[in-house]
Amino acid sequence: MQPLIVYGVPFSQPVRAVLWLLILKKLPFELSLINPGSKGDNGSRNPNYLEKNPSGTIPCIEEPDTGFTLGEAHAIMTYLSRTHKWFDVYPEDERERAKIDAYLHYHHRNVREASLGLVAPKVRKDLDIPELMQENAKRSLSGALTTLENYQLKQHKFLCGDHVTLADIAAYAEIGQVRPAFTNVFDLTPFANVCAWLERMESVDGHDVVHTPLRELGDISTEAPTMEAIKNANVMALKAIKASQSS
Image (tube, rainbow, N blue to C red; front, side):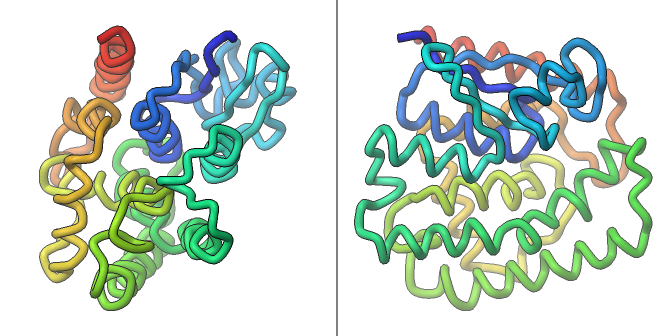
């Protein structure tokens, strides 16, 4: 069986979530770099890529043996968990699974705002995200963190209970990136339960590998990174991922 192909770049939050799951579950894969928004040969708007993922987003996976392709990080993660029977991160019990699905649906216009309102304006100046949209995104993120603080993480170690699930992996890919250890673009100190959860997530296998690009890029709170710095962060991440698979 040929290894799964993952299309994307390591700096992408949804891509990181998928890669983290694959590394955690030790499923062999090949990462094929795709430039978001580009129509070039390796771009997400190139007709060849759109044949695989018509939405033109990253990540996308491809099963070389069957030709099956699938876009959208959460669809990919749940598909892989079902087909490989990864019941530790996506339980077989339908009610437990439904709780995880509920978070994954909630995530898109709440926790995902960590990227849209805080990180993207720094690293994707070409998107020219309006100031009003950035402020709205920050408010949405604050509201989402308050919800996680007062409900999901008030009585449990992780979002859907006392063990890591797909919900935690998806959430950390967004929330974790704003920590002082990485981009340092949001004050998380008012959220004690969230901060404790973030620390617990650091010990999950694969954390350090998939967060290599953030560690390489460092603090961007006062100065936006150069395109060269972003490219270098992705290159270093690719090396770390390859090294983790050969060890």
